[in-house]
Length: 126
Image 1 (tube, rainbow, N blue to C red):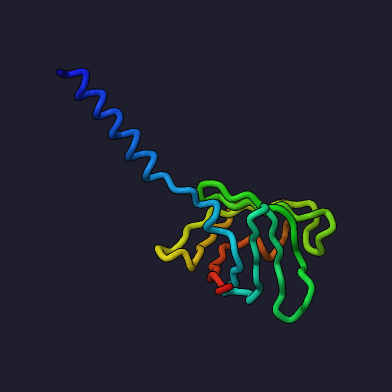
Image 2: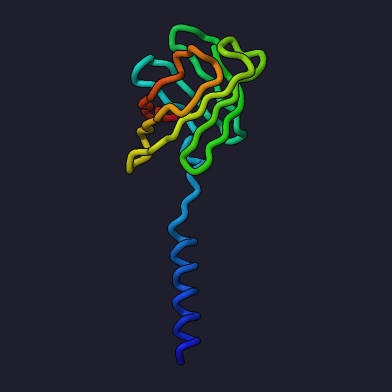
């Protein structure tokens, strides 16, 4: 009798673990506005990002990104206008509704850079 109970307990733990782990990589996708600088950052589903100034028609920073388990790393393209060929990392925590992202600065290989700070971003409607 003890073996079936142990097996059921293990199965329950595995199922609860599988259901509680959520894929947060899609949460970063979309357009965000930095509340401090007013710039817009857009993340697409293909792992690319761009940073736009509302006063300019052209992006001033772009490249690739990874977002895994709350860690965001942006790798600036070699032809980007700001810090080409560098990377910056933040930890990101979303509000319950997913419309606010609090970024805590971790590191930046482009020093000094204005992106080397904590940020608060607000999701923009499509």
